[in-house]
Length: 348
Image 1: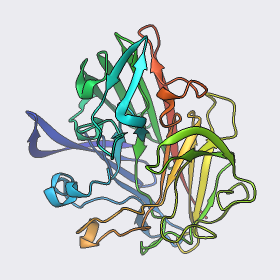
Image 2 (image 1 turned 135 degrees about the vertical axis):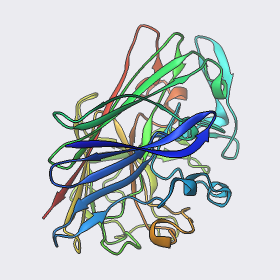
Image 3 (image 1 turned 60 degrees about the vertical axis):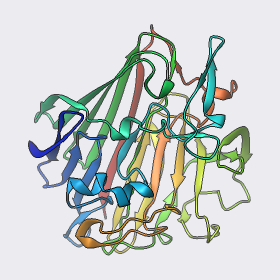
């Protein structure tokens, strides 16, 4: 097991961007930038014995701050916070006080506002090589940042095991009641040659998905998957019955006991023989098949287009801060925010 830090010489807000590489005994490698805790590489050995990178990104860090990339910003590989997905009207209320956020997606707030956790340089507070390669990052979000209340301290660790499990462990605390809903936005493609992911076989143990309004904001209504193309319980090709113009950009309620660490999804690609298993303590998983992806000069100079990747964004219910029937996304000063998500890769 090995941990390597690489200085980029690039400074943002007077903090240097540093890459951290985690390597296990099998030679699998995960590379993470402290900027947005971006997962830049996730290299494993496929069934043919070839090394394969299963996440989208750029060869050099500069790609992530390129103005052309940011014009159609897809959050490649980054953490999302303080609040993932959309908040209706960009506003919410806690203890009788209303908070108005930036309306960054139509009239709604998307992924934490104008400058969320994905555009912050995090501090590296710990590294370890035993028992597994591990790095822990920390970010202090001050009261009023993006108009969220309370000072919020978040720690996020990445741990790579010899079973090709990348374990993300989140923890946090606040000095004032605030809204928190974190996720990670990695774009996966399990094919050795990349391209459209419609033939990936995807499975999720979900009986309901969340209705959305015309701007993709969750309304609070649960819809059954049975008899619809949203039914992934037995596993099927992602492109089997999907809307060919829109793909998937929906949130699915996991059939599980609240807070337990369980399998959220299983995705397999035949040519590589790779399977990605996603485990999480979170109650829902948002499946996004990259309808709006349009990135020039990705890794190896390859352009990334719509449906060239899938995301499994484990989190609490989107817009849950405004829907009392959903599990609470309010973090109180006497509570600790806690979440674990595991990306496990299996080669068969």
